[in-house]
Each structure stands twice: as C-alpha cells, then as structure tokens.
Length: 392
Image (tube, rainbow, N blue to C red; front, side, top):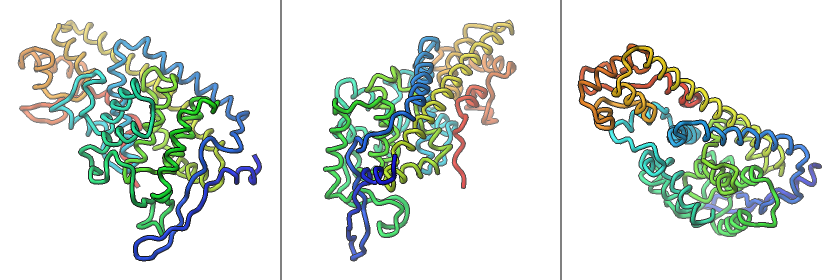
C-alpha cells in the first residue's frame, strides 16, 4: 500500500498541558477497522498456516490423558512470561515453589488464587460464557488482575482519569503518550463497537491482532495494560471459536522478539502500517502454536517413558504410581502435601520418593533432613523453556 494511503490510518496528535505548565503531545488513534482496508493478499498464506497450527494444538486435547493438567501448567507459564515482559524477575520454578504450601487442584475452578494473572484469565473465560467481551468485562478482568498486586493502588477495575505515558519520566519526555483522559471514553466506545460489529468481515486472528494494538494504544488503565492486552488475544480467539481451550499465548514470542514487538506497535501509530504488524502477529501464532504442540507431545512422551521405567523397576506399587501421577499436576511438592493428597503415610511417601529418585524421575531440591521438597525435574525443564528472567 502506498505511504499516502497508509497516512489516512494515522491517528490525531493532540496538544495537552500538564500540571506545572509543561506542554506535551498525546495520540488519539483512528477507530478500527483500518481505512483503507487491510490488503489481505499477503496475509492469506500466513492465515492458512496459523489456522492449521492452531488446529493441531487444539487437537492435542483429544490425545492428552488429562487436558486440564496441561492447561493448568501452561497458564502458569504464560503468567510468568507476560509478567516478565513487564519487568518481573520471577521464574516458573519460583512460582511453583511459592505454591507448594497452598497449591489448588488442576481444574480451572481451583487455580484462581495462584496468581493475579491466572485469576484474571480464569475469571474472564468464565464470564465470557454469559457475557460478551465488553468494557464492563474488561474492567472486571482488570480488577482481578490487579487484586493484591503491586498495582492495587492504581484504580483496579477503573479506567484512568489522568494522563499516563510509556517510557520517560513524564509525558513531556515519554516515548509514547496515549489519549488524554477526556478523549478516553470516546476511544473505548469505538473499541467496544468494533468488537461486536457484524459488518466487519475479518478473520478472527486478524481481529485479535488489531484489537491488541488498539488496546495497547488506548492504554485505558493506570497499570496492567500490557498484561490485559495479551490476555485479550486469547479471550477473543476463544470467543470467536478459534480455540476450544485457552492454549495459545503469545507472551513467549513477544518476549523473545520484544524490541520488534514494541517497534511494530509504534510503527502502526506513526505510519499506519497495520499489515506488517499482522504479519508479525501471525508468524507468532504459527511459532507459538507449533511450539505448544511440541511441548505437549514431549510431556506425553516423558510421562509414558517414566511410567515404563517405574514398571520395569519392579517397584511399581500403587503408592509410587500415585505419587508420580500427583507430580504430573504439581512438579514441585513437599512431602507433607504429597502425604495429604495421595492419602498415604509419611514413611510410604519417603520410600516411594527414594524409588523415584533412584530412577532419576524426581530430585530433592532443599538438601534438608525435614520438610523436603521434590521436583519432577525433566518435566520442569520442558515446561520452563523460555521462562528464564529477562536480563539486560
């Protein structure tokens, strides 16, 4: 598309003034969908590949012995990755260690207290069954996301009433300044209309790509916009029926390519080049869905190999198999928790863990004589790929 046509998609720069008299420029985006419309010819081959990759991932539900188990762990991985993009240094193992004292069960209903991110994810998925994606629901999800978090004092569940900015120490030297508060509700109203406009004939993946950028550009909350914007991708794909289960999360791709990710967001605002962003997004969908499918297959193969190893050891007692099954749901656990959840005595737990240690399946990670904690190490290694904290 010619640059002058792209220019028609660029939003409005608004002159504003801050307390103290400093002047700055805020950006008000054009409403979705882009005008002129997206050039789809270049996008269709990637769309086909992306839909095929998502279909394979969704099909894993048919072969996984316990799909909720994979979902339970995968949501935690996403929670860690999305938070890392925002600057946290937590790893997946850190999160699981934190959970060892009070880990909920593997069903979706039981995971809401694990982290604010997981809570927001599950709340949104549950509410979407009865309520369409809307500004009301977005506020409710935000309240869950920010509950008991470091941003709990930044109007959880409420759209901002003051100016925010990205980068820099104030609006005057910021990298990007979203719409001023007096223009916010107009932007959000048009955003909500786009979510439900039946006259907009766009593939669901393209709709999710556009929605994510628009939400990040509007930046309607004082905090949590990045995390909520990434959650919206999954919500929209579930709402549109592309995903049966919320198994696709792009945070690993965004983290691995985070400078390119930020550059694309800014390029849409400055040049109107939505097509390059959608190509980047669809490439991420293909990579992420393919990797998630491979991860599920690796986990299945590991569990099968370890069950066979237990069987061949001659020590495949009911307790050993039960504890192995429990560690599939909770790959880091202490002896007290194992004893309680598997309904066996502490001596039986310890004997069984000795067997699993000898087979190289579990590893004690504290070095203590009492209150030992065991990790299903190879399982953790598969799950943790890509979740090392960002440095530099």
